[in-house]
Amino acid sequence: MDVDPILVEDRAVGPRTHYRVITLNRPQRLNAFIAPMHHALRRALIEAERDGACRAILLTGAGRGFCAGQDLSERAMSEDGPPLDLGATLDGLYNPLIRRLRAMPLPVVCAVNGPAAGAGANVALACDIVLAARSATFLQAFARIGLAPDAGGTFFLTRKVGPARARGLAMLAEPLSAEKAEAWGLIWKAVEDDALMNEAHALCARLATGSAAALAAIKRGVEAAATNSLSDQLDVERDLQRQLGRAGDYREGVRAFLEKRPAKFQGRG
Ligand code: T3D
Image (cartoon, rainbow, N blue to C red):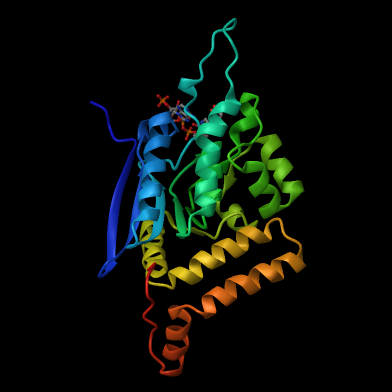
């Protein structure tokens, strides 16, 4: 019997407000990617974005791993067979996934519950807030099989931990502990294993009731900062702030502050 390669569940946090939990679900292969898993994940992300009541996403893995990257059993080649075009799978599957995670207006929290290897590590790094269980590891496994990091690996590593550590992680392909990943600024936080999911859910519930407009703008601003000059980025901030200043959440946020009460934000409109 075929098992769903991902599981999708909505968690309500208020009237017409929820966040979506997406669980990679091939635990016997440490949730390694196969094409149907890519397609199902793509659908779930598109549907979450279209669902105006969905205000955040929690991405995690079933079983003891987060994701071991590409399922290598799909990549077995005979010695004299034709070479594979890996550029085509990156173009068709991994790159659209990374672009979508970075561009979608919803905050994406990743709960790394175990090994995150190859493209699996880089999918985690593409998320907005990454929590990892203390026992989880991040492994740029690529060089072990004669590849270089993909799915944004060279970009995220270089920008998050700097070129010296990026080269070491990619060339030596040694697992990095969750604690070190936090200390190096690769992820938001390492948490005790048994606290991971509670903490991830609490974070999503908090994001889901925050100002959707502000969170989307923060995401756009931080994304743009990766490549902008300071001068260009000041313009981006001006434009985003101008837009936010005209929106209801700002009005409500200021009023709530002055009235010493929690703000009630509007949602995604
Ligand atoms: O191909 C393209 O389209 C281009 C894109 C490439 C993107 C990539 O991600 S390339 C990199 C692919 N990933 C890897 O090279 C990582 C391979 N996995 C590992 O190195 C290790 O499994 C881990 C370090 C992640 C975890 O080690 P450990 O000891 O905790 O677990 P394990 O025993 O190795 O794995 C458990 C099972 O999952 C095992 O199956 P078995 O023996 O119990 O039947 C193992 O074979 C399977 N598994 C783990 N990773 C993969 C996998 N099966 C297929 N593909 C995998 N990537």
